[in-house]
Image (cartoon, rainbow, N blue to C red; front, top):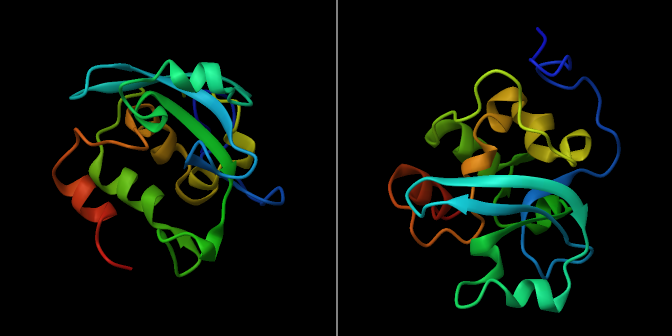
Length: 152
C-alpha cells in the first residue's frame, strides 16, 4: 500500500540506528526539527530541516521549556529509554492509539522520516499524528498523557 508521498505505508528494512522524534533538547546529538505552533489544545508542529539547537534559539522558548516549543530528534536510546519496552517505542504506540489523525492526503514533509523509529514501527499512522505531538506537553490530559505516564 502506498502513501500519498509515493512511499510505502511501512518501511521494509531498518537503515541502521533509528532516531527518536520526541527527544529532549539536551540529548546527545539532539537536532531541532520542528517548531510547535497552534494552541495548547490543538498544537501543530511545523517541520524544518534538522539543525543543531543553539543557546540563543533555545532561549526564545522562555518562559516555556524548549521541549514545549520545539521538537527535537536524537538517536533512539532503545532499552535505555523509560518508554521502550518489548523492543518497541511506547510513545509511538500511545501516539497512534490516542491522538487523532491530523494529516490528510500527503504526509507532512519530514526531514527525519527515513531514520524515524515511529515511522519504522507505526508507519503512516504515526506520521498522520506526529504534528500534534509536543514533547513536554503539560497542557495535554486524557488517555494519551495517562498512557505515557504508566509505569513500565
